[in-house]
Structures are given as structure tokens and as C-alpha cells.
Length: 148
Ligand SMILES: [Zn+2]
Image (cartoon, rainbow, N blue to C red):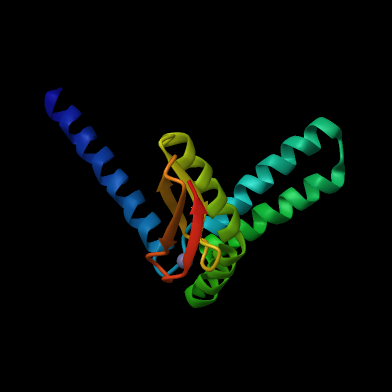
């Protein structure tokens, strides 16, 4: 009886490894999920929810399209093309991401005043209450005068 159980366990283990190997083979050489695919997936979910609430069919169709594009990108074998799309997406959303980071930092550290470099958008900070301070961006070396 114990031997039978062991055999079953070994069989289960073998099947699990088999499934893992097949999944690995299937995904090898493919782009995989990146930020753009994830964003499309979230967009699809949000649109599907709004569509369910409002009954707007067109939103459901856009959601479906976003879902299909997201999955197609994840499984695509043309990795350089997908990387270029991802970079364009990152460039496009950079101002938004910089502002989110600015707010995040400002909430975390109330003793500092945060602002964005006017040239490159890097989040910079000065201690509060020190009057006007000259700040040099460590990334692009642009000098600005910031009221603290
Ligand atoms: Zn800068």
C-alpha cells in the first residue's frame, strides 16, 4: 500500500515537471508580459467593468481588442519590435510616472520640497525653509533656483 502511494506521488511529480517543461518550451523565445502588455490588460479590465455598468457595447469591444493585443504582444516572437513599442510607451508615459514619483516622495518626506528638473524631469529635492537654493540636476547638470 505504501509503495503504491509512493508510485502515485512519483507519477504526480513527473506530470508536474512535464507540464512545467511544456510551458517553458511554449514561452521560450517569446516576448513575455511587459509593462505595455500589463497596462493593456488593466485597460481592458477597466473598460470591461465600465461597459458592464453602463451597457456601452463599444467599450466592451475596445476592451476585447486591448486584451487581444496584450496577449499577442506577450506571445510574440518579434522581441526587438516589442521592445521598441515598450520604449515608446515608456517615453510617452514618462511625465506621468515622474509626477507620480514626485507626489510619492513628497508624501513620504515632508521635511523636503520636491520638484522636477525642468530639462530632464528627474525628481529633485531641497530641504524646506532654507530660502532660495541653487540646485544642479545630478543627471543633466541643469542649474535651477528653487524656493524651499
Ligand atoms: Zn535634469
